[in-house]
Length: 344
Image (tube, rainbow, N blue to C red; front, side):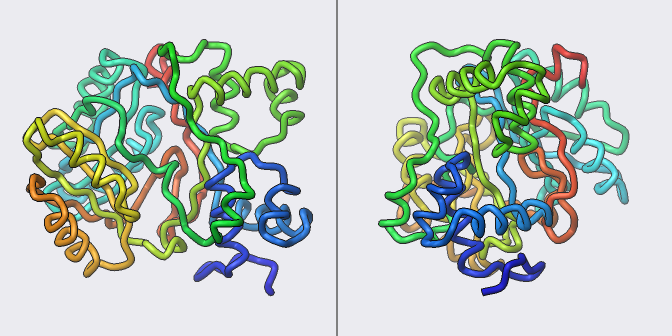
């Protein structure tokens, strides 16, 4: 079995390793190796080659149940799409930036610590950026029914999955943006979600015990999302499509929950706007976009899909800057505090 990641494909061990880290992003190599039936050194070496090549990565970002989010459609002046996308990719509140086909040039996923910060970002940053001719913001009206950290490759057997404990977000009794002294830790984990406690302590100039205590508090409280991602072209589902749909209000929750159970779905949120439900899926081909839409319409009689937007190229994916092959080549942290810190 080869010991390096290929630009064109990943082998079964690579995929199983990524799937393991999707389930348990900070699991010790001994635990992952035990589930996969390899030694810990092999697992660690394989992961380092995937990470260094930009083929896969573990990241983290803050979660605030009282925070605000939006999907923003952006139209650009002729020839300005790429320039605008690259400028938006540098914004800490722009988690994901895509060049798209359909009724908009770009689709931007933004998160902020509160409605006021989100409003400032939409109006005072995105709305005035040179090269943009118009924007349409779909404001998220509640928690996501589905989001990318729960998406899985499904390369592991049920027994292998059971052997991994996972780091899942818990329901918080009390909400609110995480304390400011956690910001540096969250940003450091955003760049490398598997950074050791020793390295984190050195970067933050605190003790290992302090880092360990803060990290445990963030995970236990549900204030931190840890996730493993890989280059979309290597996922087996390289085509991303976002559906703009309408559902009668009394059927919104049940319909959204049903959509979230489709294995292709990466994101499903209720929004305020001409449509009240947006869902993003990863599929194997453009033909599968239509097939998935047919399946959704058949299974969900209350769902009316008004539009769809296919991603042509991802410029930024949850903080990671990507090249044309979808490999990570840089990082701009997803930062809920950016507005108050003067970063944007």
